[in-house]
Length: 89
Image (cartoon, rainbow, N blue to C red; front, side, top):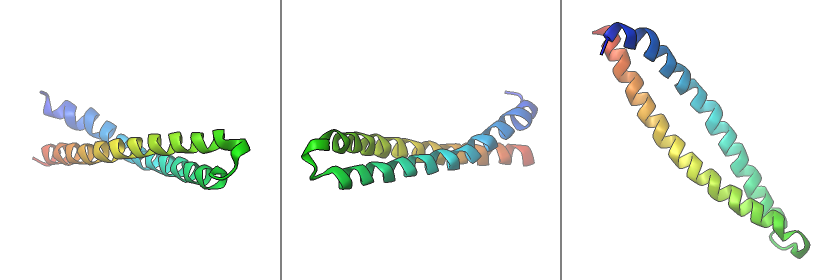
């Protein structure tokens, strides 16, 4: 591996990835809130049970995505810290 290439190309890329996690997580939290709203609003409405089902599906999907993205964010921060250490070495 070329340390100069890692610090000049990979480090800025990972810094951008870390910034984008904030946007992605905010979007997933917004969708989670919408899913909760759908489930609460339509839980007792027999004529619109499809929206209750959509809410359940969206809620489950958001929980899975949030869990995966939290783990990915933690790994990305560890990797970025290692790249910063390499730059200062």
